[in-house]
Length: 104
Image (cartoon, rainbow, N blue to C red):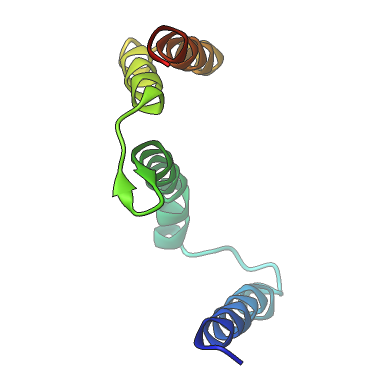
């Protein structure tokens, strides 16, 4: 087996153990401690932001500035203006499409 396969198998086993630990530990209908609840509510936002930024600025192993960045900036401005989320998505898609139409 290659090193990558071993790493993937170890990570999969660790993930499975961590996921199984929750129901085993909290199986008797206990609530999470308040600190964990607060952290769990805050985690999705930075994780989603990291995924968006990573997918917008990277392609293979280089830093890229293209139409995705224009869409990201348009979405950031729309979010700053506190527009509804579905409008933000539409604005980002339109900005990206217009940039690609004009400069590709």
